[in-house]
Amino acid sequence: MRRTTISPSRIATLLVAAATLGSPAARAQDTLQVGAQAQRPQVHVVQPGETLWSLARQYLGDPLLWPEIYRLNTQVVEDPHWIFPGEQLKLAGVALPVPPQAPAEAAGAAVAVAAADTARVVPAQPPVVDTAQAALQPPRPVEAPPVAAPVVEAPPPPPPPPPADPSAPTIFSVQARRAGAAVVGSAESDVSRYRPVRRGEFYAAGFLTEGAHLPWGRVLGEASEPPGQRSYQTSSAMIHQTVELKAPRGAVYREGDSLLVAELAREIPGGWGRVVKPTGIVQVRYARGEDALGEVIVQFHRVVDGQVALPLEAFQDPGMVAPVPVVNGLEASVIGLRDEHPVPIQQNVVFIDAGKAQGVALGDLFEVLEPLSAAHAEVQRAVAVLQVVHVRDRSASGLIIQISEPGIHAGQPVRLIRKMPS
Image (cartoon, rainbow, N blue to C red; front, side, top):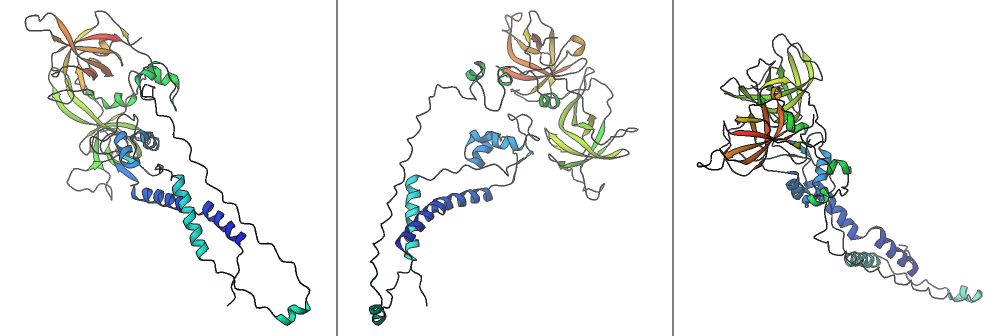
C-alpha cells in the first residue's frame, strides 16, 4: 500500500488550522448553546406570581435580560410591569448567553487537537535506492533541513474591567430618571415625563353599570369543533385562542370589531347597578348574523362562557401631563371595592360616588380620609391615594397607588387633591 509523506512544514500548517477553525472550545460552546436552546420550551404559560424578571432568571439565567422576553411578546404584554396568569409568552428566538471560554482553556484545547492530528500522521519510509542507477547519475545537492515554524504564543488575556461604582445611576434608578439621564431604547422625554393613565389600566379597571341598560352580548366559551358542540363543563380561553360570541338580540357584530368581555358581578344597592369586572378584549374574526368568532387579544383574567361582551369604549389618552395640586378639592365618598378584599392593597380598584357630572377626569388624584381619633373626629388624615382610571356619569374607578393603613370601606370620605389640566 502506498503511504503519503507529510513534511514538517505541512504538519505545522495543519496545527495552526486546527487551532483556528476547529478548536474544541468553539465546538463545546456551540454544543452548549444548541443544548440550552433545545431544553428551553418554545412557549411559557404565565403562572400566578410570575414576572418578566423571574422568567428571565429562570430561562436566561439573568433577571436583567427581561427585555429580551418582552420584545418577543409586545402584542401580548402591553405593560412589562404586568403579566397575567394564562398569558402565553414566546421564548423561541431569545439568545441564551454562554460565558466565553478562558484563553488558557482554548489554548489547551488547540494543543490537544494538534497532538491528535500529529498522532494520525504516518511517518515517511526511506526510499529504496538502486546503487547501480545512482552511480550513473551526477550527485545532487543536499537539501537543507526545513526551518521549524516559530511557536506563536497566545496573547495574554485582557485585564478585568474595573469594579462598578455602586453609586453610579442605572436605567432602573429613580435618581437617573429625575435627572433626565438617557435610557437605551427610550426617548428622554418618555422617561422623565409623567403618564397618568395607561390604556391597559383603563380597560382592566372595571366600572359600575349605574343601572343603565347596556348592549350586552354573550360569551359562549372557547370555540368548539364542530362549532356549537361543547361539553357541559365551563370552557376557558387563553390569549390568542378563539371564543364563540352571541350578539345582542337584533344586533350583529362585524369582522374587526373589538369587544370588552367581562364578568357581571354583584349588584350594589343605591342605584349603582352591577359591578363589571373585565376579563379581556376580543376581536371579531368571523361573523354571521348574531353568531361570531373572536380572538382573545388581551387577557386580564379567565375568559369563560357565561360572561358578557360589550363594544369596546374608546380610550381618550390624557397625554403625558401631570395633575396639578388643588385646594379644597371636590369631596365624595367610597361606594365600595371592585373585588371584596378583606385587606385592600395597591393596584386594587375602588369605586367613588363622583363622575363626569362632577367634573372628574382620568388621572385625577383623590386621597382617602380617616378621622384622626375618636376624640378628634373633625380632624382627618389621609390613609390612601386613588388615581382615577375610568369615569362614568355618576361614579369613577380609582386605582390604589398608595396606602398606609388597611381597611378601605363604603362611606369613607375622599377628597380631590390633584386635578388634570382641562
